[in-house]
Length: 294
Image 1 (cartoon, rainbow, N blue to C red):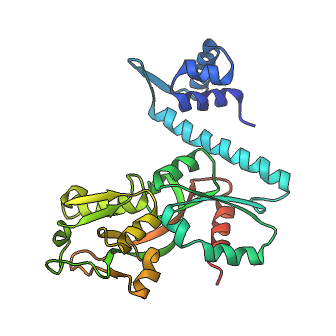
Image 2 (tube, rainbow, N blue to C red):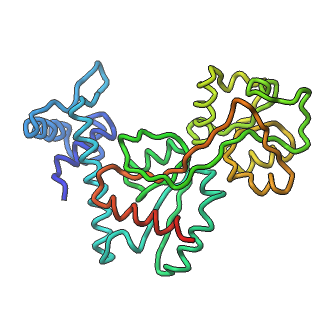
Image 3 (cartoon, one colour):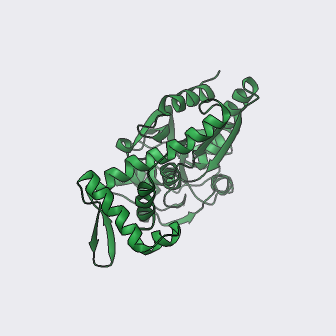
């Protein structure tokens, strides 16, 4: 069980305000200050600095937060595991990004449950940014993401490498056959919301050629992958997607890949979980068991 002063520290980190932390913990503000002072004396390090009205974690404070937040999340998992009599075996909770959740996970989950009918699985959807925040809060055991993440802050394992391609309706008319990325800038682009893995990957690859979303003449911003594909089928614009999401539409001839000389890209779908967790090997095994069954 974590020391109550660590709980105070984590609560201050959550609100970055002593008064709000005191209210959340139902203790006085001087008590919060005493708890933080005790920890600073114990670790011989300043944990917070005051910048005007703003409270900021010091480098030492950031390290303590990362380690103690991990311990808190592991303690919650350990409590649940002990009540079940085993480690992370009955209830499995994980997050997925939209493309993966809608087009990738159903088959492996189905195969896994046929072999393990006693398991309970909770699948949460979110964009990459949201899933990273949820992992930090200990909401999930792991996440399967398509977007970029800070590799030094997580343990991770690659699930698969997939093609990321420009796509349009098979009946889409181009006044001039596009050969280069810039040849698409007169088109309306259908894009996901900021924070989504698909959007981040597109923006990063555009930036490698000194371009950005604003280079396209018009856009449609959509927060749902099904709607993106529907709009493509209705010839409302072009988009950049994982081939996995549009395989059936490409095979049926409804959509077509736009072949460009200067845009050939692959990207990883990646399992991530909290770095240095005591459950790290169990989580890695769960990922393997669910997603590598043939």
